[in-house]
Image (cartoon, rainbow, N blue to C red; front, side, top):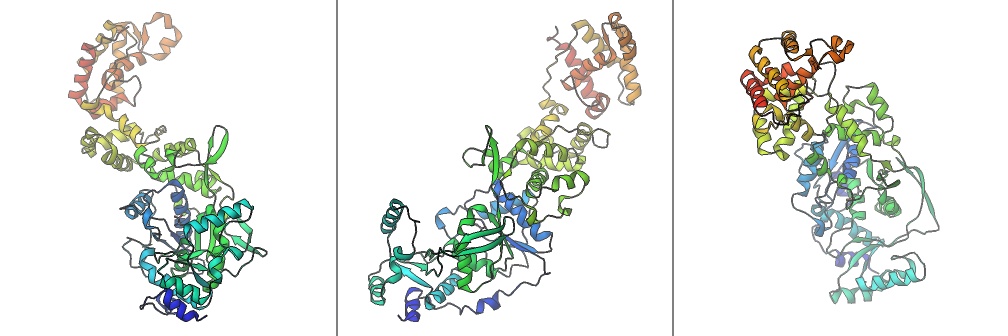
Length: 553
Ligand code: GLU
C-alpha cells in the first residue's frame, strides 16, 4: 500500500510542518535538574471542584518547591462540553485559593513560549503527527459506524470477551487500498486509529510517582487518535502536548490509570520519552459509616463555589488540603504555627496511595485556627471580600467604614490580646458578629434575668455616671457603686461567702448593661464596646433598653 499517498488523502492539509520542526519550535526548557514542569489540564466545562483544587495544589507545590513552572492548558477537544467563561472561572477560582499559574491559557506571561494553550488551536500539530503515523503504517482510517461498533461491543460482552477495537475485531485494520479509496470517494466519514503493536500477553512495569511500582498489561486496542471532525482524542493530544510543552510530571486523577497502557504506547510510537505520571487517589468522605467518593450530585462541598459562598478562609481550605496531600504537613504546621504553608517541603512521593478522607469538621477546625491568627486589617480584607460578593446591602454599607470596623474587629477577635477568639469558621459568622455595632442591624432581645425595678435602676444609675473618658477600672468602679442601691454584692468574693444575703452580684449588673448595649448577655469587654459605639449611641441604647424592658420575668 502506498502509505504516503494514503496519508495525504486522509490528512490533506497543505500547510503542515515537518514533525521534526516541532522539536525546535518547542525546545527543552532551561531549568534546574530537579525543577518540575506541571500543568492543570481541565476541559472548559465550567465546573471546577475540590478534586481539581487538590490536584492543582499538588501541581503548583511540585512546581514551585522545585523552582519549576506550573501552566494551564485547556483540553477543549470536545466542543460540546465547552461553557463560555469557563477558563476565566478556573483561573479566578484557583486564584481565590492563592494558586497562580506561571504560564498558559489567558495568563499574561512572558513565559508563554509553549502555546497555544488551547488544544483546538493546536490541531495542525496533532494532524502533522497523525499523518506521520499513517505514513509509517502505525495508524489507519476506520469507517465503522456507531451502530457497528455497538454491535461488536454487545457480541464481545455476550461472549465475556474484552470489549473494544482490537485484534480480529479491528475490522478496518485489514481494509485493502482499493476498499479504503472506495469509502473515501463515497464520502464516508472516518476516524484515524492507532495500529497497536502491543499484546495483552505482555506486562509493563511502571513507576508511578505516587502509587510506586505498578504493573500494567500492554495495550492492544486500536484506539481512536483523530476524531471524524479532525480533532484528536484526549489520549493523543495529551501525549503531544505534554511532550512539546515539556511537562516533566503529570499529576492527574487515578481514573486515568486504566488508560496508561495506551499512553505508554502512544509515547513510544511518537518517539517521545514519557513524563513521570502521578495518579492521585480520589477524595472520599464518610457517609453513614462507609467511605465513598465525593459526588457532584450528593455533596455540595465538592464544588469550589461552596467554599467561596460559605466564606471559608481560603488559606484554611488550602492548608487542610495540604494535610491530605502530605501526611507530615499537620505536624509541621503545629511546629511552625505562623509559617506560610509554602515553606513546607511538599513532595509528591509522600502522597497517600489510598483515598484521602475529606472531613468537613476538620476543615472547620483548621478554618477557626487560621481566622484566629488574622490581624484586624487582614480580617477586614477577608470579611470585606465576602461581603462585597455575598453580603447584604446593609453589610456593604457598614464595610464602607473601614476604620470603625477595624476597631470592632480588633475587639471582637481579641487581636493583640492574650486570648484570641477561636470560634469563627466562616466569613458570614464574623460579619453577623459585628451587626450590633450598627444601629440598622442592632436587634436586641433584652432577655434580663431580673425584674423591672432592678433593671431600670441599674440603667438609670449608670446613665447618670457614665463618662466615655473613664478607663476600664473607673468604669467598673461605677458599675460596682450601683450594687448597694439594689441589694447586690459589689464584690464577687463577698457574694460567694454569703449568697443568701444578696439579690445578685456585680457581674449581674454588668450583664444588665451588656444586654442593654449589645442585646446579648455575652460580649467582649463592655467598656471598650461603649467606647467604640460612642457616648451618644451608648446612652441611647441604655435608655431604650429601659423603656422597652417588657420581657422581664
Ligand atoms: N482533560 C483531562 C480532564 O479533564 C485532564 C486529564 C489530565 O490531567 O491528563 O480530566
